[in-house]
Length: 388
Image (tube, rainbow, N blue to C red; front, side, top):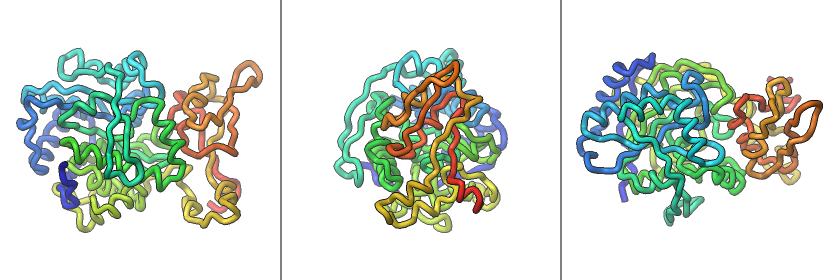
């Protein structure tokens, strides 16, 4: 098993536009700084695992931008490597669904130009991980299981559940389709869900060669990972250690603490930013001071309250999903995405709309994340809104 080094190099460079030539130059420099020899991957199974959370235009900043993936493919192609692109987006893991996602997210063109092979093998395998702290087995999509080398291309975003989506969270996309919802139901507590993400990331780092690239040229703030606003960050991050990459990403958007990063530090997989081995730009030169949290993360101090009254006080104050009626088209994607089946589509006027059973809702916000029409918001408690 490969050792996860807490002093791994993190390459941080300014990059303010999706120009393939500029990104290519930055990635070449970052690979050199991180001592990544792409020629050593010749003859191996190389997979690019991008963040393709759902069918979204790349300019919406919810998914990894195709310009970053194209620049990466160019570097690999120059070494005779045509990588496979593999991802399990939110919702059912079906070839037809992934085909439309690849196309909308701008990757079909790269496949047409023979720079990239799009995965349509919808099978998965079970991988045991005895060293896991919270989960000791994972079902993982087949191309990731077969890969020798994984290039993870994540998108830096705010996140309604995990506060931040970056390098570590990106690996949740190796879990096949609807099983993601089962995992949300299995680990409803944020600390357990974050620990599970760290187990998954640790397992892949110990068994594969993993290169992490964080697309932070433009990110998403506010109600991420899919319903927020596009925000220029102007950076690219590369590291062989996803945990270290996220420490730098967290610092850039000022989101400390992020629970996955805190858990990573407990496991000694990364260090505080002052001791992180950053090469290139200084984090202070690119740091943003006003990057917006998701509504569900605002007032997050309540998460730290003791579970008095059997936890009922916490439930009163927790943010909850709510419908934006004018945007809802009654497609039912929210109900299909709910891991606890707490959403029922009911007749209202001329259409069907979701009805939320808040008593059983685990506040995973899958419904908001996967609504194709951004018709679900996160509603905060009235008292908290007044205080804010």
